[in-house]
Length: 300
Image (cartoon, rainbow, N blue to C red):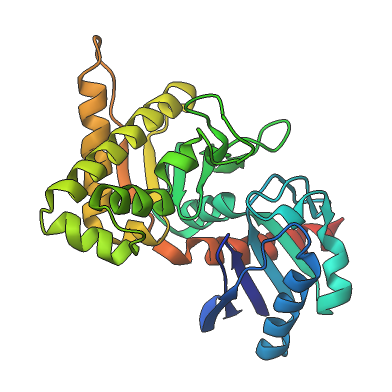
């Protein structure tokens, strides 16, 4: 089965062709993300499907709270045009069957099906990118919660937001990769830095960059501890492009151990590892979800 598979982020739409489980024809296009950009978004998707044709379907990893059975986006995360959207209607535009799932849950599906959460009873995937995705696995199934908000790590708030921005005061606002880049740039007194530049500075021992990164990791550790208190995961997989850097994973792990070790009572440390599929986890999970949902619909 040839499936056009998409990982839709706040900045780019990554895509690939998955043909009987094998990934090929990778690429990315900018994500139309404005409140009135839904038509532009659909046309971008249509262009990719036409480029990859012939395909038997389209699988999507998307931000937001998603009812997978109804193929309905209740929320769209940073994609303001994807709120209250019936994605089954996308089939009319794309001309192929469509299945959708939350991005972090796609990462969790990939990791417990064929990755680093295999055999784990309670596990967590945290994906660092434009925001922070969360996927919770309990007993081999992705836990979604009553209102489909379980795992919405970006929407954990460190303090009451002081503006209309969703990121203001949130876990994502403090600990996304975009936030890390901005924090290091501010510490260095420059307008902007790329992720590659940030880690070059940190690994070279730049004092200001290292101090900003230490504060970033300390905030990550506190929020990971808080998540621990709710779901008590055995293993946490860190995902997103930044997770490909072993230094990032090691630093977050050490920060969690430092935070938990400073508590006035004994507290367990979870196993913290990178996602097996790094930046491909959402694509692989979206494909696996597509296959599962097509079988489910065929059997109904």
